[in-house]
Image (cartoon, rainbow, N blue to C red; front, top):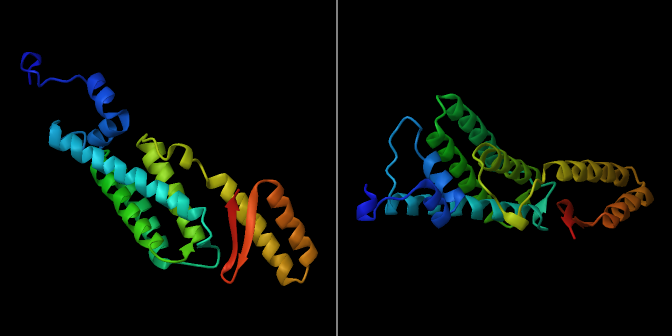
Length: 206
């Protein structure tokens, strides 16, 4: 490469042209001890890869906040895919910082999530675990920007809501409907709408 030939680009110029997330994805897609060829094709591939991660994450968050995400739906396929991805990601990172294999594990998880949300009803807890995993690995470990205003850290808020929904369900099963209604009303005051379905209660942020 030569600046006189016009085929030389600094890291700052690459970031300005393609964005930090694309450049980071490009670098993460190859193990650090291997050579990475920067060019039109490889940066296009990195752009497509990052956009797939971003779209998959945003789709998962939207599904989690939809009425199709239900507490009584359980998908063994999704839950197994999440735990498998977690094990593979950690193993890859512990194997001489093999980001290429870790990226593959993350992409396989996104494929499983996309397949799951193609259905009509979603495993709420499994999907939440998947979103948390994507945030932890793609955002926390790889440092990728995910979701913008559509995203966010759902873990703590969702865990609290889950706990309250479990308490409300126990109150209903015990015949304490007035107390169950109070919990629903308290959540509504906090901006969380509860909808009772045949598959269990569904929580949505208003």
